Length: 180
Image 1 (cartoon, rainbow, N blue to C red):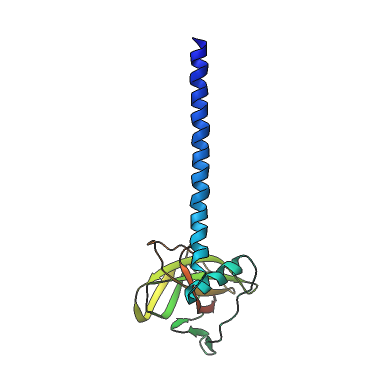
Image 2 (image 1 turned 30 degrees about the vertical axis):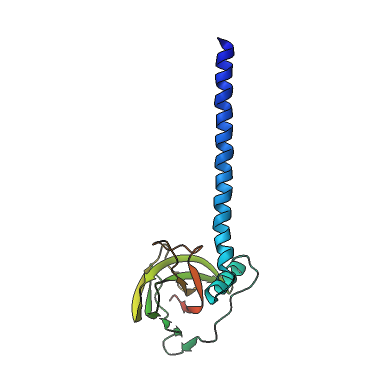
């Protein structure tokens, strides 16, 4: 009877090993497909070029630069960039967008700026089509007085929730503000 038990144990172990190998291979192919989607998105349009800039920025290849379209109003500290307007505001758990023009469904995200480089995303809010819209972004972590932040615009591409890995950053659509 022992040879039968040994044979059954061998079959169970073999099935377990095969299951692990299939699971691992599936995970590798799934991850390669996701990475392939990002690479595929880099090739032809302006939005795709923006993804390339984000990937380089994340890898530390290039430092973000201030956009020439931005203009600062000295009296209020407001920054306007192609329909996006944000003013300096009190530190806290939310950021008020004074105005944004959206021709497509967009996401606006608040990001930290440390040493001139974009850092963590503190919060994001979906914006629907419309002009001169005001919106509020609820943050996962509050802003800190004296720190600089950027509101960055992403084009919504797919899932209902914000995903900085899938949603495409819109080049030139950002505004800087300081938390007081």
